[in-house]
Image (cartoon, rainbow, N blue to C red; front, side):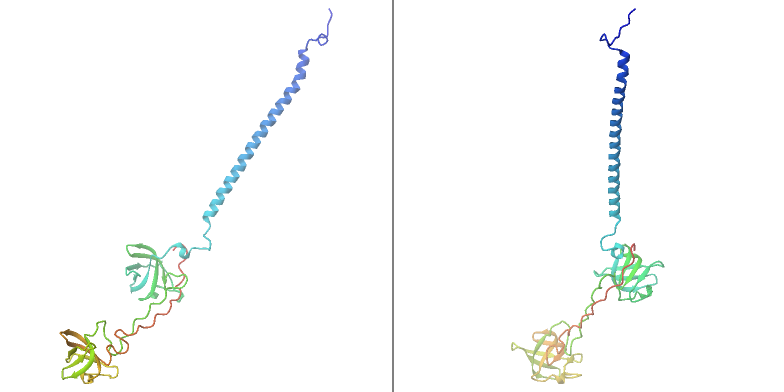
Length: 283
């Protein structure tokens, strides 16, 4: 029997073809596997980068939120005083303040209350005295403050409030209250218990005096009716009824004497010094 070469006859050899196709299929599988691995690697890398960016952003926000404001710590820990005013009374475990608007506030203190006074090294409740300006830190309930800290001299910080102006000086000799005189004029006649004045508009006024009438004359230490003489200018204070004055007081020489009716005001108070430092943060 004659054997023929299949290839020579143009008939494909399946065994030979299979051997040739196997390497090609293996190369395609390797290329697919490599592409898949590369895609997975890129995806994983992108996720890692995104995660790192998110984490960094969160940390940045967290750090920003926890940083103190520019300039350092807030004064008094950021908490304003519950009450500021002038001390009116002091007790064993409390004192009262009168605030700027006139409100009375009770401040309760305890063994844990701290005190600050820049003029005293170790201040206590004994340094809270009537008339001093005090700031009380703590909890205010219906005008009663449970104090954790008390600043004597004011709430602290840069310069305290300026001192209160002095009260007006007393009226000079012949000075009177705000009540104007009932009559002012030149003495025309003088009697035993009265005298007459001619006012600026030419009216004649009779001034009745008594044992309770007081006299003022800048040139006389203890003036009396005898110092009321014709030609002097006199102001009569009292009740005027139809040009007859029942005098309670007579000012001889000028209507109000040196110093005026209310006197010159006293000098203003000295500028206040800076208050003590506020309490530490958290109070």
